[in-house]
Length: 168
Ligand code: OFO
Image (cartoon, rainbow, N blue to C red; front, side, top):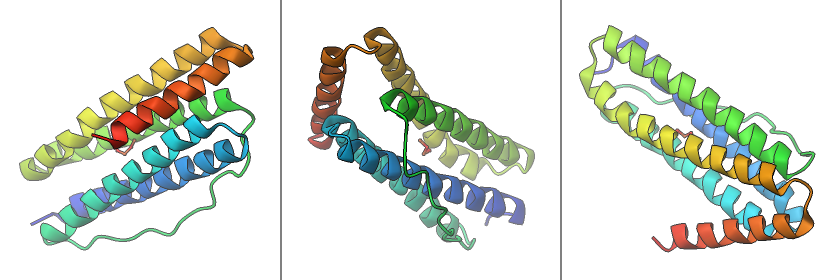
């Protein structure tokens, strides 16, 4: 059975995952309208993954005797400056998510809720992967600078990466 404190921490995390999904969906849609099809495919997939993170939490809260709260959705930004802006925002957002996940993990230890602590480890490893990927993409973009050919290849690489992940 979840304590009220952990239930509310997990509901907070549900809202964060929902917000992440919306945020990346807005980025995906913007990228699609800019002709960045690989970037759009990558971000649509990322948005779906965040929704999956949210669902996993909802199911866990309910299974452990709590009540999951489906959060209201905030309007994400409609316009992004360029592809660098997108990946900078994505990286910053993931770092924020990691900090929030760490807070939940910390509360689990304080409350001696080892079951939820164990469940949250999946999110901890997921964040390591996501932050590393975002950092790698930012590094690549820094190398490319304003080179149009480089950007074209970057976008195509993201298309291939997403196609291979989807085929998994
Ligand atoms: Fe990328 O954030 Fe979910 O956990």
